[in-house]
Image (cartoon, rainbow, N blue to C red; front, side, top):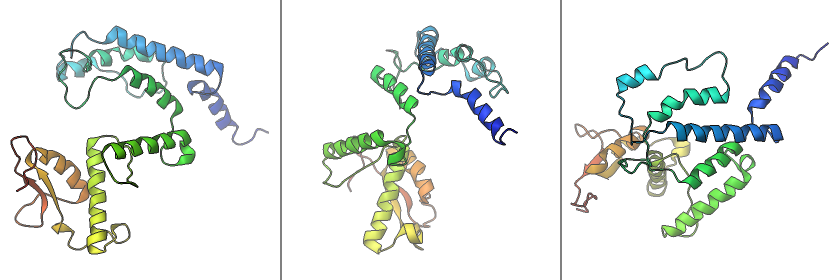
Length: 242
């Protein structure tokens, strides 16, 4: 009589060809997929910073079933992705105006293949042994470059807003611990937490709002607490010291 988990094992065996495994067949499939993806980019990237399609036009062009009951082969999926590529911003085009993102380095694209193939988790050393050491080495180098004292450390985040939030969060907790003897970790925010304020330049008010809302620092209205306090900027756009 088959074991009760036989259907699960059969499903797992059928799905394994879709995953990267230490077999020659899997490596060949990866090479084909990466080559096909590069070919899709070369074939579909527009010769302009943007195709010019309006949101209404894109809503008509980019149609189809998002989550079909059965998947399609990689080549077919990449063919379907050609419209997405063609109507994306070409950050590497000479006429593209930089906003928040820049043209990717070729070396970074090659590194992404390795990173996504390894799929390490930075939660703990046992989930990313080599990557953990690399992260520590890079953050140590950045701390020295910034002139921070010995023992300083850091961590990589997904972007600037998350970094601002983490910095604000840590600064709040450290200040309360050192100046008020209050542990946010064990006791939560103190009763007079509405007196805490975020000081930022007027030009950074949006970023102050993005990181202040989750931290509990609302807008300063009707004299109720301090919240976010935009300060005047100097001609260079920095916060004035007075």
